[in-house]
Image (cartoon, one colour):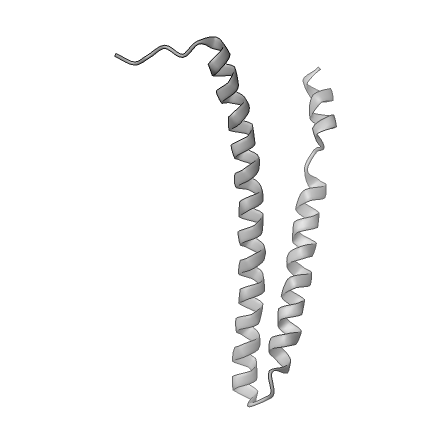
Length: 91
């Protein structure tokens, strides 16, 4: 027979759910940034191999990957409604 959770504990669990959702969202953003940077670095390696060049394209494309991932990250953060706006919408 399942245990019945008191209302106070139920409220605590729902508060933790929003914290977990925020943690997962920001973790996914970090993984996305790492993937973009790694992809651009890999493309730089392949380009340098193809052209038999010094690691110029690795540096250029890695830095481009960092810039692109930061741009995407900042755009995602700014597109989120702030916590103040969320509170106003609930009222």
